[in-house]
Image (cartoon, rainbow, N blue to C red; front, side, top):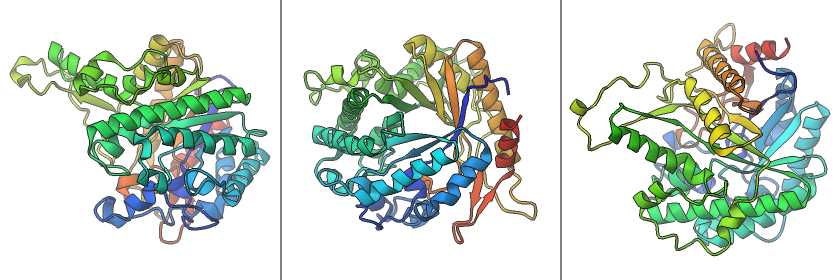
Amino acid sequence: MDFPSDFVWGVATSAYQIEGAVDVDGRGESIWDRFAHTPGSVKFGHTGDVACDHYRRMADDVRLVAGLGVAAYRFSIAWPRVVPDGIGEVNHRGLDFYDHLVDELLDAGIEPFPTLYHWDLPQILEDRGCWRSGVTAEAFLDYAVAVTQRLGDRVSSFTTLNEPWCSAILGHLTGEHAPGMQDQEAALAAGHHLLLAHGLVAQHLHAAGLRAGYVINQNTMIPASDHPADIRAARLEDQKMSGWFLDPVAGRGYPEDALRDYGWDLAVVWPGDLEVISEPIDFLGLNYYTSTVVADPDTPDSARDMRRVDPDEVTSMGWPVAPEGLTVQLVRLAEDYGYEEIYVTENGAAYPDTVGPGGVDDQDRISFLQRHFDAASAAMQAGVPLRGYFVWSLMDNFEWAWGYTERFGLVHVDFETLVRTPKASYHWMRGLLSR
């Protein structure tokens, strides 16, 4: 563990994945409530209705965070719990929950790192046009103001969006996530208004004397060979996944190759939008899980030098284990974009954990994390200003379209009894942090 003493170690969760209590204390319906209850959307018809029941067990879960010995906890705030109709009246009972969560964390010596949007849009806003409309960006600002007015006296750093690529592309182009659309124009409009919402809220946070963060997800795109067509294909996929959601924030506009490939006419981009989107951020978060080998579909294999192939080792999600890709991404963010405060805001792995007589002996996860910690250390030795690392996740949870079939947690959750059992990885990480 070659990290400085002020390096921030933490764990991460998100509201819909752990809270449950979807109809308690005035919470409104979210797009994930509707999507999960739509037959065929989630494996085995699983929903987040109960999830980990964190809403009722929050104090016990904070004790698990504290027992791990980390300095920070990254969680998300459920928009429909705070503003059930998406816009208008604030539900103070919903805000009370996060008020109490922040106090519990601070009392335990843990810094709160809240995310304002982790995919649970109020369903009523989806019915009115969702992120495809700029009205939703304005509603997001109003919601963020309500949250920061309540929590901003004790919380200094807020993340605006988590993984807008997932919200735009998986939610509106491939249909794998809520709201389940398959429409390119809708996806690109949603992506733009997500970025606009980020910029509006970043401006508000700075005006309020608070720090604004922004979190992207990125696979390292590896050309299938040295063939120029494969290299171009990998570069294009990189632009579509990270450049599309990083370049506008960095003041560069949308990347040209991706614009041409999409054939997008920018009709929803109004004068001044890009200036708002490029409001400087105080820190950038990277969610990294795997690397992707990219091949040009029109290039025959016979024309390739097939030296680059998918690694044999994969997680239970089928994702290749590629820690070196984390180093690549961190170096790139520092060198190509010049960010001076970077966090790994999510990294972890799903494995088929079971509780045995001695607990959960998840050695695969320990190996995964150790190698990624080493990759982060290598990036720092290369000059990357990496300030912290959040493991995904504190506990097993509702894993979106996979339901409860995939387990990422350091803590095992029995989804029948909701009993929490710290895994071997939890004890291993606690031992590392206590040295």
